[in-house]
Image (cartoon, rainbow, N blue to C red):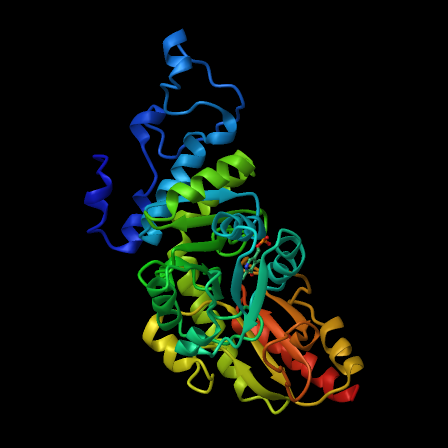
Length: 395
Ligand SMILES: *Cc1c(COP(=O)(O)O)cnc(C)c1O
């Protein structure tokens, strides 16, 4: 194997990139993978090298061969100029926002944003003198009317990871670009494989590596990719905060990266099989899965995405809460818990009414979010079939 340069890689297809990106066996005595480098102190060979910081790595907080392998690979997959890491997805979000804002700014955030992002904006950013305004995720080019002279960020997530609304990302980010506003995207659902964030106009894109990059529900990690324009500020902010992930987690993310494409393709097939089956159930009013033609965001999904993943929601017909509890409590294969993107199926109830402020959320009945894992879908259907019996019996 010859170690190709970054420019050579540009011509490769994504699957091939996933195999080669970030790997330098010649620097690791020929071993295929970059190992876990644990370390704080890095020794310099001479006084001169120390005072001029003349070394590829200078201290644990500013990176190691393990972290460099992941940021190099992620940069390549995202089509970015560079990337930074954070210990969790939420830490990546806060780092990106703090890279772009200053006291006195106004920022625009989609009403369907991941809820902890909202808590950060309404709490910490408000305390630092940054005002957040939420907008209808379907606003499209209408975003222009909400921009003020001090608007510094437009923050999107596509699709919203509970309500599954799809904003028109290219339209909204084109306006951000024209006005010199930083365009930030939470791209966790699609990953760069199914939604190339910077091609679609993002200045900084966030991935909760906790989800599909891990794929095994066994690590927490955040990644931020940036354009050449934003990379220097992102890197400086990341260095200042020194929110470094541990090397074991970075290693596991690199391991996950090699199989990301095949796991996502399977998540897509499994998710669609279950979503189509659920669409035909009498207990269900709507399935919110962008790859289904019945989903309101379907046209944008078709235009902008290369695939769908295994996370989607359903709106049930009116059923009492106790019936939903009876349905979920008896499930044998679906676990109940937060996060997603792992190999195991999950279900959670959710209610956006509790926190949405810009747009009303009025489902006909209770709402559920599914993460479809790698189990046989016939077993999953049978588990839910028994769940629906309990739902009806307890109503
Ligand atoms: C889970 C999630 C995050 C945060 O990731 P953590 O690693 O759990 O902090 C951010 N955005 C979205 C869309 C998520 O689903």
